[in-house]
Image: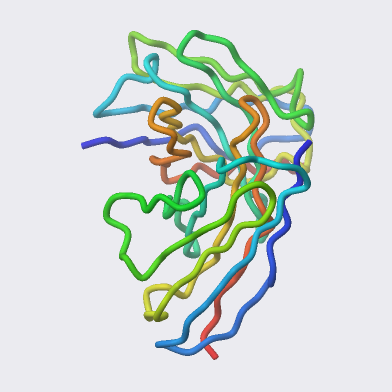
Length: 108
Length: 119
């Protein structure tokens, strides 16, 4: 199975900060990577698909890049609504998808 | 409006059974890939199972033979039959849509339904 490793596990930041989260795959997944935002008690929300495509309705301060095994999610200017947990997910294999362990973005 | 609404969660004893339902609106479940994803309390997301538009199904190794995904096209509803439940199956279960043709991942999620396996 493909393993997904996110770093850091927790990130403390202030409103207005630029924030970057990294996701590494244990083998190449081409560009089949998604990023989700999850708030407590809520379902995950799709932010990014195919490594760098912004989902409709997602603010442009969110961007992402990468291919193969290394991927990043960047929030250009952190807003109060962005404090949440972020997950990467590979969907390269059609019948076994895996998520990273999550990165919690906390208020500094 | 495109929407998924789960139901059927609850408290069940180890070894027991439960059936989760996920009613879709705004699209047809038989025309798209549909999955179940779970999240144990305080933990991350774990993919559980998928049913393809053609009807093929796949399950994670951790649930194979015990949790079974299916759908009823006439009711536009996805199901997860949960048998031989274990404490480690305790989680919030989400159904999610995967529009594979668009290249997008899980774009629509239900609100989740909690399953607690305990004596």
